[in-house]
Image (cartoon, rainbow, N blue to C red; front, side, top):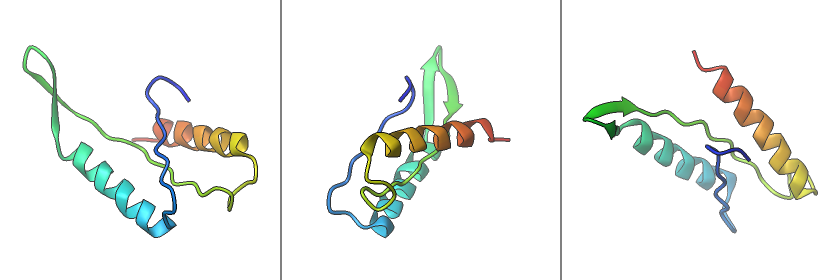
Length: 79
């Protein structure tokens, strides 16, 4: 994972609950203004991928690699 990427690991969490948590996080970030310097305010958007282990793959390294590729594509497809 790169410098502006991070993972959240939710134990014993269904995909639907993980989606609700991710959506709440996304909305909270996007609905806030961020002051970066000299009162300059910016908006931030985020891309989130929900993965399920071991349902998607039995190899955790493959899961992380697939997530990294998907998030890179999402970030570069923003219009």
